[in-house]
Length: 266
Image 1 (cartoon, rainbow, N blue to C red):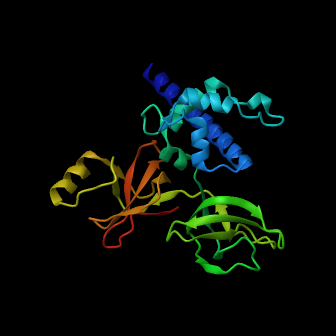
Image 2: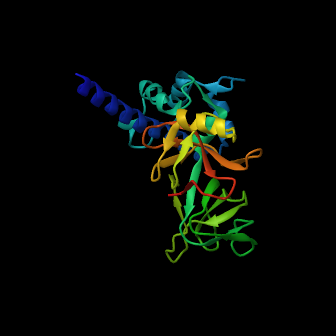
Image 3: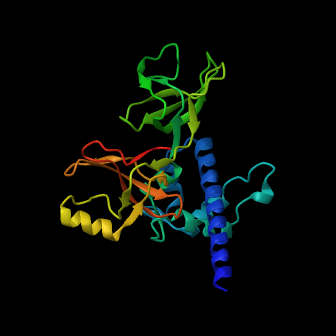
C-alpha cells in the first residue's frame, strides 16, 4: 500500500509540474503579445491593491485569455490552473507575491560564444559596452527583436555578472550561436541551503546552521529564484534558489568571502 501511495504521490507531483509549466508558458506568451512588464501582468491578475494572488484569481485570468490556435483540446481548464497553482506557490503561503511572480517569469539565456553587448538595437550604429564571455548568464528584458539591416535576432538583456544592460545578438546570420535559452546552476563545493538570506558567521552559529539545514552536494542542480547579491556584513554572495531534485527552496552561498566558488553555471 505504501509503495502505491508513493508512486501516486510522485505521479501527482510530475503532473503538477507539467501543468505549472503550461501555465507559465501561457503567461509568458500573453506578456510578449501585449508587451507587458512583469509588474503590469501581476496587477492584471491580482486583486486591486493586493500583494499577491491565489489559484482562483489565476484561473480566472487564464480562462479569459485567447485559446491557442488549433490547440483547443489542450487549453487549460480552471481546475488545471488551480491544481498547477500548487507548483507555482513555492513559498507555500497560499498566494504568489510580486517578487515570486517576477522570478517565475524571468527569462535567462546563457552565453555559449563570446559576443558583444551594445548600447542599441542597431548593430551598425550601436557602441560596444563590453565583451560577454562564454558561460555568462543574462536576464532577458526585451525581445528577441529582428535587427532590420542584418535580419539577426537580438535581445535586450542584463548581465548577471555586473548588471551591464544592453543588446545582444542571439545567433549570427552565418549560423553562429551566441546565446541559448535557460541557465541552470550547479553546486561545485558542498554548501548549505538556508531559509533566510542573512547568515551569521560566528563559529557557534555556523555550526548550528550546518547541523539543522539541508546540505547541497557537488553536482546538484539548482534554479535561480532571485539575483545573487552580497551580504555586506559577511562578504558572502548569496542567491535564492530552488533545488531541482526535490523542490527545496532557500538561499545558498555562491561565492565565499575569500573568493571560493560554491556554485557555478551548469
